[in-house]
Figure (cartoon, helix red, strand yellow):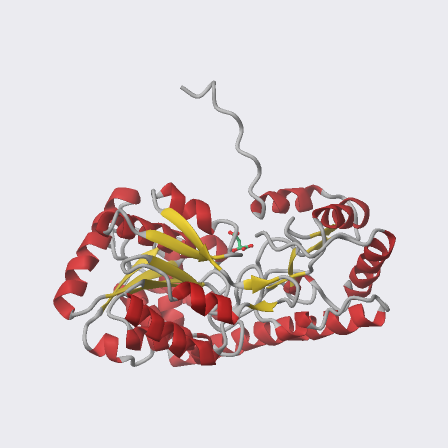
Length: 407
Ligand code: LMR
């Protein structure tokens, strides 16, 4: 059965983790996989998480099954974090299930779309998270692309995006990154969300918001502005959230899928279909991550502590963005790297060729994704000069072709 199978190539992002781990060079810098790092290069366990885990150990009184939708305290809290006191919640138009990470939410969403409307196309931005296409294709969905990122100006192709969305057929699904676009760091500005919402309403496409970085751009509420604007305008929508980054719970695999329906009855029915998909896929989600998040979000002291720790992560990333832009300017390179400071979240494209990415890795032990996506949180005051000087060497000695933009 298996002997004829060719090996699957390394994942473009996760494959780098192993390469980096095995690199013995002391000067190595990991700007690859999307995890937050502190000034010492660690991905810390948040203090509020440690305290919530301590409470859980003391309070947990059973290991019995929790059910397909997961922990109700978690689903209520994560829904409120995304939507606040939104009318769709009051009107019982939201159904949320806990999922194994944000990727689990995407896969369940894909199954639900395929089940509900097998002919629907899923529209992705022309650069997106490297794993997006395969998650949706694995569920049998057809993919289309809409214009998003301009590699020459390192900014949003807003007019082209609106023009493309104005042609999306009714019933198709359009995935948008709610904030901190992965991989470009280029966000949809607040002023555009109402226009996108009006297009969704007029055309009848279903928005799918992927919110993996709530709190990493501006703050928890502003980062959810697009989600809330769309939810107020459209009859149906999907929202995938992740607690990997903002709670630092990467390996706990904790996320959620929320479905917004056009009425309480239809939402409950669609929610039951979602649970059916979950039952087929993995029966029910693991409990630990949800128990931590639920405790943090339902106890005011822990919530306040979490908000402070989240703000500290966000501010460090922003400081590293400013530092990278200024140190790269100081190298005297002709290129303007000011865009790094303007973008948000963990990532920006450096805009260098694959050969230059390879050279940074092979010669200088600096790891980026092949598309030149760099994780700004991998920089620190201690390695920024080495990074800037190495990049300047690579760019001076072999000027690269036009910036690459493939995820
Ligand atoms: C990333 O984009 O690097 C992260 O979301 C990790 C992953 O699973 O790809």
